[in-house]
Length: 175
Image (cartoon, rainbow, N blue to C red; front, side, top):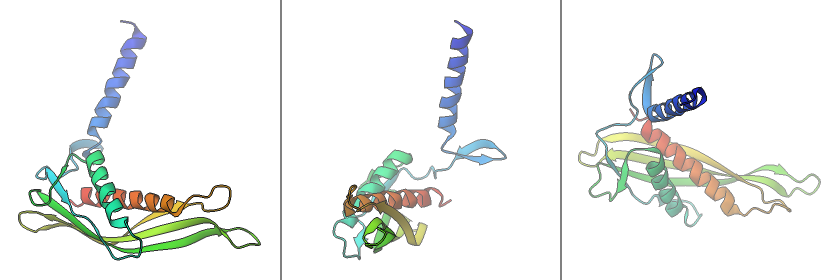
């Protein structure tokens, strides 16, 4: 085996080892334990309640949270009735804003959608609150200006994904 091959294999093993340690806590610069509560194996995600006028945000956010949990945690998503933990939430606000205008005309060039969500993550058997956040916000942007002409749904999807990422981040950092 050539030296270049040995170096390549060593580098590849190092990268694999570092990626394996990515879910571990760091103490004094060393990874020693998982950053996930090992007593939790399953999460039930109930459909978020939607108190806004934006139809369908609740389903889209619920699906995005499920995908984030599946992609970024060791937890399995299952029915809330049999899950170790249950996530419930309420979309409180969906506020559109303007980032920039067309000079002289005043038409919106760049816009935002800011979602505000309250959620509770509880242990299914005891009802113990593992994480509770009020007014957690996720921001999405889109460009409705002529030439680009992105639809509002682009901003909604961006805000939903950002909010779902923040919710899962909060679940992970609860301990």
